[in-house]
Image 1 (tube, one colour):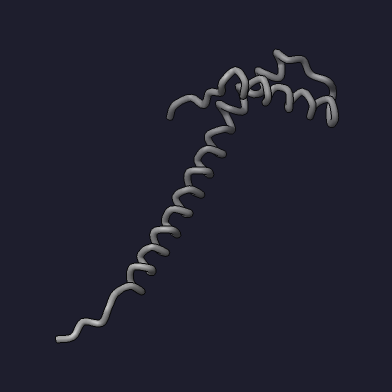
Image 2 (image 1 turned 180 degrees about the horizontal axis):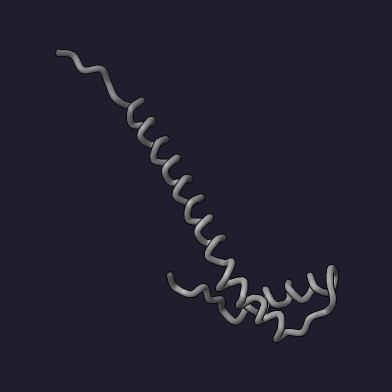
Length: 81
């Protein structure tokens, strides 16, 4: 699997949110430790969230395909022999 990477803007936003969380709930954390924490989560925990997202997307797609199949079935006309 390809490594999960973020743009500079995304990384800055995520680091800001990590730091804000630490300020509110724990002890203040610097930018560098917050980046290390983000990298850890992206590498170690990110795949679980990524895979869950893929499974959810697959389930939604399969449901849509079932809906389309049902719509097509409803369009069928009776055949007379």
